[in-house]
Image 1 (spheres, rainbow, N blue to C red):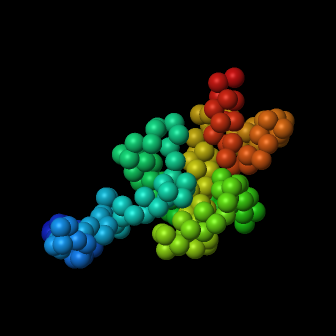
Image 2 (tube, helix red, strand yellow):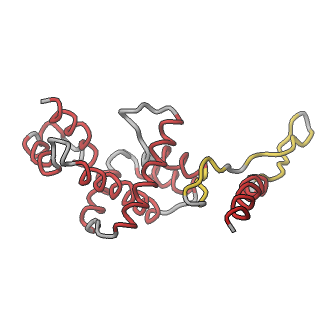
Image 3 (cartoon, rainbow, N blue to C red):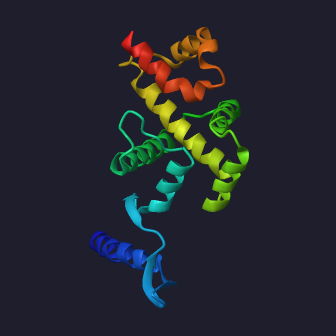
Length: 193
């Protein structure tokens, strides 16, 4: 069974890439140009494909950012894969949960990045997702982040409560920037002090 699953994976992934490709009638000098790639598998985790469009959508919607690693595509892919692996561990552990209030607070903070919600809705339409999908992806990102932080807080001198306290003490500095948006900046400043 082990060898057959390896052979199946070696065949399945290229076949999926071919199936995710469609003929295009886009013209170049009046002639069909051939094939257009619709999507591609950039990685797999436990045999589940990670599609390029998932990563591009999260980048475009601002759900996947890598401020301290830079925005190089490989670093963003690495950040996304790390998140997926952490979420797999959270599933296995099964004891780490977020409250609805945490998710809604993060979502409200996330929406503040859009001065015009029509731009946000246009992006949702472009990617074929709704607000619930964005909430779900934001919840997973927050869950991975908070779980990771809880696992390493022994080694870090800054606890989430310290970040919240520092944010509230300088509330006027942050203006309309939510705690969620300011989190990494406040944490970095506390680590440096």
